[in-house]
Length: 294
Image (cartoon, rainbow, N blue to C red; front, top):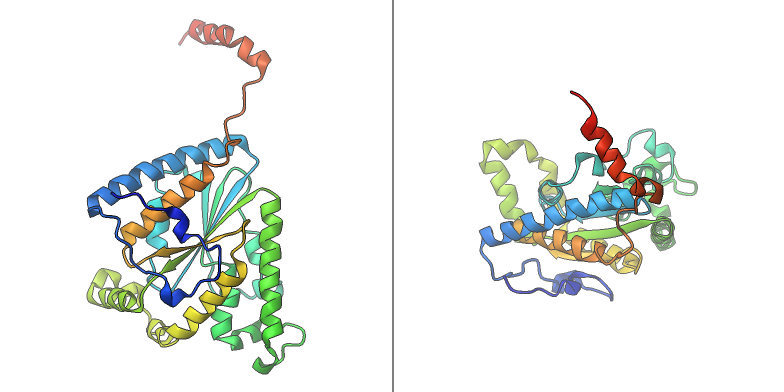
């Protein structure tokens, strides 16, 4: 497997999605990629144990992508070796009646991981500048002041939403949240093939919805919305990574490797030292246990 400069996937300047690759060659077989993936995810699981003991940071991983981009399977494979109590996954669907009675960030804020844990948002707070940007009529369900019809939703509205998101991410980052945002960049042709497989395989039929085809017709609008969201919100505290997603094994490997390489830069994250008084008497405690009778 050839060495890949992972920094190429991080968004540090303005991007045009149409010019970003949806497939990358790792010069490795499928089995080699999977073997490397197993190594990295084991290392990640070990690092999470250390993070829990350290207790001063949490990790938030945001996954976005078009339908069939592979978010669910990526979560399953990347976090397979984690302690189940060390990672919490939230899949955000259409807002509930209760959620709509709060601001658009409320349900995401209360789902944030506690210190020592990983949180994965499968679809995220960015739906509020993606789906609602393509379907502004959905905003009417939020019962917002000054928004009585679609015509009231102007550029200033979206400017404010992006500002709210940046402030939200800055705030949680300043309080110990390490943020990763991954856009699984899928080609339209690969999505077509994956939708066909859902129809062709009876075991996958349940994943298909006619609504998938309706949203597919809006591909261009979604790409434009993703491009704008990424350009306006990729910051040093909460960077976006654009992951080529036409090959699922490659996408999983890249996400896992980026996570591990970036997280291990936090050199202060280590197990706390044992209290000197306890450490001094370890031999005595050991002897006490050995002397116990069954």
